[in-house]
Amino acid sequence: MELKRKLAAVAIYAIAMGYLEAAVVVYLRNLYYPDVFTFPLKLLPLKIVIVELAREASTLVMLGAVGYLAGSRGFVQWLSYFAFAFGVWDIFYYVFLRITMSWPASLLDWDILFLIPLPWAGPVITPILVSAGLIGGSILVLWRDEIGKPIKLAGLQWVLLVCGALIIIFSFLWNAPALVRQMAPRTFPWAIFIFGYALAGIAFLSSFRNRASSRM
Image 1 (cartoon, rainbow, N blue to C red):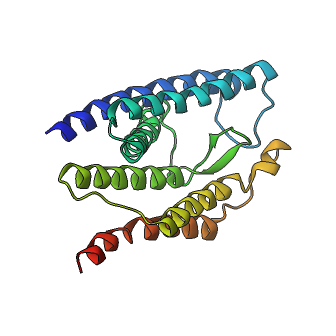
Image 2 (image 1 turned 180 degrees about the vertical axis):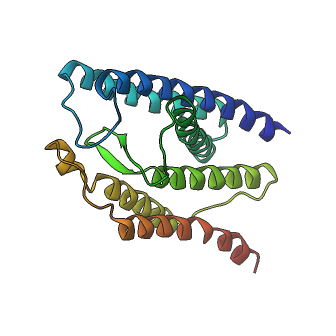
């Protein structure tokens, strides 16, 4: 019951953040892309870019803070609530963009995902897949912890999980040089993204064998 209450509270917070983020994007696109959002990106005033970078950093701080408040029993719990909040926030960000702007028209539409340290870009479905994985994985970790059967990753599994996450980030940064030069992105490196996603997933799911092996 305690887990459900915390997840519900964190989800409500993240959904509200998703709307707030979408509202900011609605304002920005009406100012700089009054017709339709498209590539190549327009050159924004330096002041606006700095404000956007600070806003994105603040978003991570806010998600991290709610994760810290909900996950009071150590790093793994904090990380799990942070991942859950991040996933819910990101998915509902696109839900609210669709409601308010009728965008994206397709899950394959390209979007700017992040700006730190360089512009991240990819089809909308890619961050949604990552967010779905974060939500599912975090709920599983928290549920197992709640019933007294915590998931424990070995050192190699942590390494593979982090490597998978970094490979995914690399796929999002694949077109960063072109975006910085105000060029349209080329093709998305699906093979790299899928490899990173699969690597992280395998590393996480293989942790279930740790407990089974310890019983033998």
